[in-house]
Structures are given as structure tokens and as C-alpha cells.
Length: 432
Image (cartoon, rainbow, N blue to C red; front, side, top):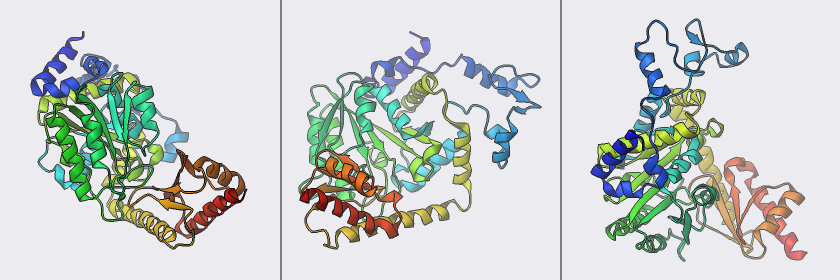
């Protein structure tokens, strides 16, 4: 075993043995080399003032070598902010700015101990890091029955975790905190569980209210008090798109410092928050009371990044950083929020108009990009296929009866026509 691994693991065991016990085998074995190429190059950057012949990039006249056909299109940016490798943890200023943004948007984080956000290649990569660090074969990964299908690939297929699901909604269409509680307590014999909380929820577009949020936190605390080590991941992909009366903060702040057996992990990013999906800029952040535990988790995270992608895209990080610092940023973001809220409200008014009879119900939605119909008379897959081939309308079938519709990508003026066509498709199938 590399000596660095022993040092990191000893720090974690001393700082919080429960967090150490949460680690997967890979999580216990991984480390970030401090005497490798990257560390030697970093030292040379600081001290080799005459010639720096360490890192594997090409330079010309003291700046990164580049092609005019690329730089001409990116002339607003300096070559040094585009072409060299970004640090494995991400651009330091971007990490700092994102941390400040997190605190501003989540006042419950004030005074809590949490790491600097580490840059990931968007949210899927952040979730993959969580899976690598904490999931071994047979470990329980708990999430609701209405979920993003990539959870199965990331935590199940890749890491052989066992997914434990519970109904997302109660009979009165509130978040099913009791279902989460029972799923957690069912893992008492194993003594460990990974919980995924995704709000606004994909596919339903639902975010719990304050009472539901408190019940979620209470369920997690009860599991910890019962002796279960709980890794709680807040998948905040659509954070900030809260249109009605719901939680306006990530539960990460409420979970930080909750219990020694609870490790909150926040996975978020500019991807959807700042409408830059293709930039692939995400973040992973840990909360723990012990500084050494946070440091060890960061080093292990960097080890996984180094062993997989080495570092995230430097240009994308630069673009996002400059946007976050721009005076016009908040005004422009608010403009897009208003558009998205208008679409969500329009969908709700269309669905509540009564014009479609009883062919469907809809699950509660108050946030995010999506809403979900519960079809009463036809199968979701049959309708999806019919709509795309007969009317040129694309939707997502989920299970037997649920149809996900992304209002995020339909202009408000076309939404009624969209649902009219879905209704027509149902009528076609009923008459066939």
C-alpha cells in the first residue's frame, strides 16, 4: 500500500471512523500522488524561473502554443486561460466563486464545515465519483421509484450496488418521507446506505416543501441514530428553478453537521443552473465537522479524477468563471428563470382547464425542467411511439403509464398545441 493511502485513512479514522467505514474498497485504496508529475510540475511552475521543462504542453514565446483558427474565435480570452491543463481540482478562483455562490443561495450553510467544491466533468461525473468512493457490491443505494435512469448505470451496473426504491409520492401527493425512512431502516443489518435526493426531481419536476424537507432530514437522522452510516447525496442538477411554494435551498445545508454517521455530498453544476449543458462543468462538495476528514475526502476525490479524466475542461471552466463574475449575470439569469416559470405555469393552466377529460392525471410539479403525466387509458410506450411517428412529437415513456414532457424546450406559445397533440394521440389509440 502506498504510504499516502495509510496517512489518508488514518486521518479519516481519527477524524470520524464512521465516514471511513462508508468508503468502498476503492475509496479506501485511492489516493492522489503528491510526488508525481503533477506535483513536480506545480513546484517547477513556482520556482523554475529560467526553464520549466516539466509539463506536457507546448509553448511558444512564453505562452501556450495554439492554432490561429481556434484562437481567432476565442480572442476574448487569454491563451493561458484556455489551453493549459486545469488543475485536477479545477481552477482555484472558480472553486472559490462557486463556494460563495453556494453560501449566498443556501443560507443554511452559514457556519457549517464543508469542503471547497471540486470541479467535475458535469454532474454525471460527480455521481460517478460518489459511486466509486462509497459503493461496493451489495451496498444499498436508495432512491425513489421515479428517478433518473442513469442512477442504475452509475451505481448499479458500474459498482454493483443494490437499488432500494420507495414510492416518490404519498396518496395525497406529497414527498414520501416515511417510505424513505423505511428503506433506510431496512438496512440496519448492513449498517450502511447511500441515499440519492434529487430536487427538483427528474422526471416529475417536484421539489418538497418545508415540512416535507424536515421529514426527510428527520428520517436520515433516525437512521443514523439507529447505527446506520448514511452517505446522503443531494443531486442538485436543476437547483434554483423553483417556481412555486417549495424548498428554495438544497438539503445539503440542513444535513451538514446533522450526525457523525451522516456524510452529506452535494453534486451540482453550471450545466443546467447556468444553461451551459455542453460545457460539462459540475462540482462535488463534502460536509464534515473534521477538517482532516474533508482533506482526506478531497485527496481521494482527486485520485479518482487523476485516474479517470485527469482534469476537467479548462476553457469551459474559464467561460463559466467569467460569466459568474460578469455584472450582467444575475439579470440575464433572472430573465431565463422568468421564461421557465412562465412555461411551467402555462402547462399547469392547460392541464387544469378540463379540456382533456379523464385520460390522464399529472404528478405534482413546481420546479425544474419536466412534468409527468400518469396515463389512465393507454400505455406510455404505445403513446410515445405513436406520437413521434404520427405527429412528430417526442416524449419519454417511463414504465407502463408515465409520460415525461420537458416544457423546458418548448416555447410557451406552443405548449397548448403540444398537449392537444398528446391528447389526440391518446384518442387515436383508444379508437384503434
